[in-house]
Amino acid sequence: MTAVEPKPAVQDTFDSLNPATDEVVGTYPVHTAEDVRAAVAAARAAAGWWAGLGFQGRAERLHRWNGIITHRLAELCEVVSEETGKPAGDAQLEAVLAIEHIHWAARNARKVLGRKRRPAGLLLSNHTASVEYQPLGVVGVIGPWNYPVYTPLGSITYALAAGNAVVFKPSEYTPGVGKWLVDTFAEVVPEYPVLQLVTGFGATGAALVGAGVDKIAFTGSTATGKKIMAAAAETLTPVVIEAGGKDPLIVDSDADLDAAADAAVWGAFSNSGQTCIGVERVYVHEQVYDTFVDKVVALTRRVKPGEQYGPMTMPSQLDVVRRHIADALARGGRALTGGADAVGDRFVEPTVLVDVPEDSAAVREETFGPTMTIAKVRDMDEAVEKANATVYGLGSTVFSRRNAARLAQRLKAGMISINAPFSFAGTASLPFGGVGDSGFGRIHGPEGLREFARSKAVARQRFAVPIKLTTFARTEKTDKLVSKLVTGLYGRKR
Image (cartoon, rainbow, N blue to C red):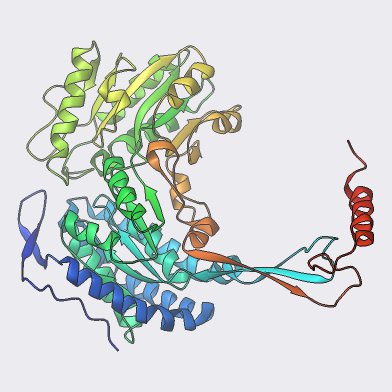
């Protein structure tokens, strides 16, 4: 049985555009709720076969898929660049990170999810205890447009390695990337539609949430994540939500300022600032503030839209960036680069803002554009307090020679990078996810594999014992004996 893309009942289509030129780069079907249900039904049948391959069989297919992606990397990067406008080098960077994650998940799924012995305890010492992780069945993945390879594969890859079939709904801005990934997977798994594609807009995603999948993995805005959770609650469908962020970077007085400035500039402006873990707020110790700001401004002046980063992929985001900059300036902030005229028709000039009040939109709301605010703090206690004063809690970055580990412990975030930008995202063994309005659940690492599996506990009696606790034939003498036994074992310390 070959993997066949579902055909829409009504042949509505939409165009995928290059955001830098508005050139049509592909046309795709708008899949209906009926199409989505059909895809999930086909995935249900495929899931049993895929799970039956076992860890080794699935790993072999995943490694072959990884080989195809690696050897056709330039082809994939071209599709990414066409649909997002990002430079080829940035497209390659996210694809390479995804390749690393596919390799890790395939290699480690058995170790993480395989059957393991657990201690049965003294009261049940005549038993063995074990736990194993079994596939959920069918996982629905709703992916974003800003990192259309790396981000959805963080869910897809780990769900597949755990033994699930997947129905993937990419962003309407990057359907071609989704199709490329699904088509190449079908080359190594032609037997059943283990990984399927559905394309369209919000209604298609909503249909996937209500189509009877066993879990939804969503990456996108907090507002959309809340709607997905509400819809999933109707059928008690579990979800993993990776939503927005307003990530801080903290610079201590003993930091390597050259490295910190470079990380801030890269973290704020790469991918046109369209990064959920991007640097949006910077808090700098007063002793090094002026020097740090000078370094950031000098580096920023070398960053050119259209060269180091591409256009805003989603046109409506231009208005958000424009509003945040205008609010910051109206509230007394100053633009050291960029500023009031930074937002064009497609591109945004890199904008460094200082003296911005902490209650302004540029500090409180996710900007998702090439801007950063830099604030002076008297010490790291103030830096941590301000960094944590947000509804978000996705990633954070700390630059300090002596106090980095202690500062990292105090930050309210799911992931921390010390003395380098975004390093947690490239470490396949580390879980990825946030707290608060940044969502919950984890992808990547052992936690990511377990996210797409259900635990099953098994206790087996090895031999019978004279003292039976779980029987109506239990006597008063037995109860007294158990009481003495428990007191002797656990009652010595009070």
